[in-house]
Image (cartoon, rainbow, N blue to C red; front, side, top):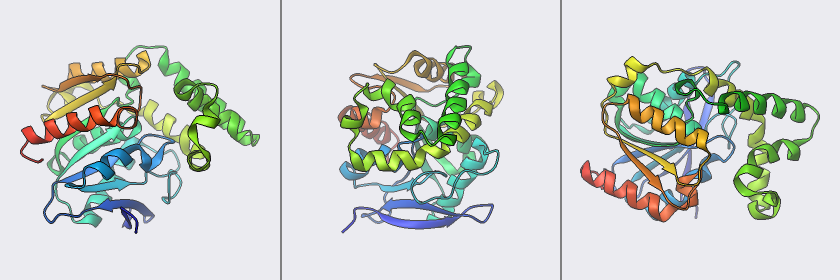
Length: 275
């Protein structure tokens, strides 16, 4: 018997969006967890499995899992409206928004576009290149271009290595496992479009200054400097976020150190009266 149920939502453009749900307790607080690029919904496996007291909603962002490919000239704002469509399909009026990397960027956009639908935010290393002057911005653009070139030549594993070598090392194929690699090879084809969307997204300082939701910003102690810089830049612009560095973790804190992340999450939700 699967832990999660697969459900479907109708997006604003008429496409069917896949999402997973674990809701074992009536009236449990709703948490919508938005995954990062490439990794898919397994980004949140340690939270969904270990914390069944919540109403978990985990969308398959376009180009991942069973959702359709990204839209032509995909934007972060459109992705936020997809997340809203999932909340509507699930009958959830307000949710705590969790996001990692791309998912954190989408979660932030959801709070900016529909603040009344968001109770609080837990954002893990949001991808916000517009907020920083850093060489990582040009590297992102170069990675998107290189990925497109390699995929056009059917050099899929060479393209995958661009993302996995920095995270897992040169022996990434043996560390990842066959099942995850098969999923990542499929998800990889959407990656350039999402990098383009992230590079184009600029929320601006004024909207962020009035975004007064309770917010927990998280980054890994072993993450790349670019991701740390973006997280801290956002912290400077939000009214009063809590910022936490998690030890023994890189860019994917919920997976890299789930014990520490889950403890942080529960403490944050407890202060809001939601745990």
